[in-house]
Image (cartoon, rainbow, N blue to C red; front, side):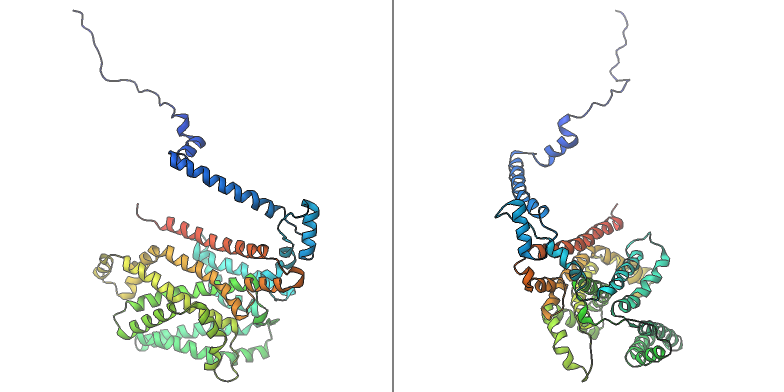
Length: 434
């Protein structure tokens, strides 16, 4: 028998075969996501029919609307002439006519550059906080913007914001001096106390004296002239930026071993969470003046800012406390094993992880706070919803509804969607599970 060599092991690799045409590309995606089985296919067809029915009526109404008209009746005449008697289309002319009032309220039109500059300064201030790639030198803008932006919006002498900023400098030096002479705890008490004393009793005299010597000022604008989305953004940004640090302090205080501090924090959180925001706004408008000295002129917008900040701080505290409770005990034990004190452990180990866990809840609280700013229309502040009512009360636009509310909803959606997308970006960036 002749010797033959038969190999049972493949010595050459076969080329990859192309995947089935029905499993790749657009066809594969449609098959896998829209028609994977009979029931899903039926639901897909029904959903597509509903979407088509909705868009077939909505899109012609939106894009076939009128942008140039002086009143609702004139707008309807233009629509009837263009599409026939009985046709319906949006009357966007009301947005075109009242756009600046919806944006700025009664703010003087020759001073629009001031809120515009304040908005640009706001974006520059939050850039280094939100994005790691921003230049670190921009933190100087972040530190200065809480004093410059109010001055731009309300006007008045430039020495008022400068003296307000000087209070932080005085408080810091008092803290350092007392901490070196006595103890760090007394420094933490003396610093804020010196800040409050400066703001309440001394800064007004200093700013008045400097204003009489060097009169640098902008045209003053009363708070009642604020309105539209400018007011909503002002209240939302103030509430968001102030409620976050206060919420952290309240969350830590609620977990404190000191009975008095824990009781105060728990009482504040439970009381604020048990009271509707509209009640606090009425307190800010009406009742707060009863607790102030006679003749005290406490700005209404400042009162609303305080109440919104306190309201959001209580909810923020519970969100952050949930993040603290989610951390395993080993994290606290690890901080103790490294010899870190309480504040070092919170700053370096505990709080960064708790905040990362709490990102969805924090951003949801921010979004809810920004939308709740529309409640100020009930206390006679002309926010976007208030301006919708003003416009509807005008004889020229009496009867218009969907266009105004749709525009306000669209603008709020842009802001809230932006916050939501940034939240998702931050979660992906800080994800360390891999």
